[in-house]
Image (cartoon, rainbow, N blue to C red; front, side):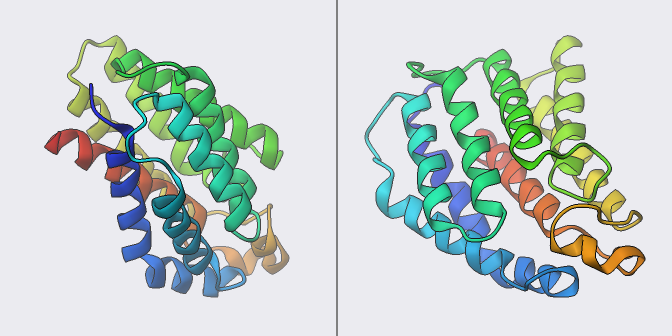
Length: 207
């Protein structure tokens, strides 16, 4: 996958910005009604601040993470910032990526979010989308599937994870204050994680 990673980041940014109101509406149900607004602001800053012509994938991801960390409010900034920076660490110096590299980057992002958020799967967070996606991607990788098959499986698993968040009680973040009243609502963070994975998949399909 030899290309400038900025183009992929720009695709993610467009997806998040286009879904600003949707994400905000989800957050209005169980949070501060600012997830979409904050994420859109952060990715607008990414489009403006991240260099477009740098071939080092890790360097671009690190800059993306630092920008999100400094511009996205609430809990999402540290979590998404950490995810991109951790993925950047394992891809630093690379100008192309293998399917194995993508697996390692997603794994690093997940572990970074787990550590930063002190969270595990099943707590109604973005991990409920990311961890199933990682597991599905890895299973397809080990089975010798094509890259698009791996990404399709990851997105399908993430979508199932988003649906799962509707059935469980939030135990992290502001949504946890609602207790059982958080049941029945999908998690905004898991949803933005799904949108990110789908944007990556769509970019790879068209590249």
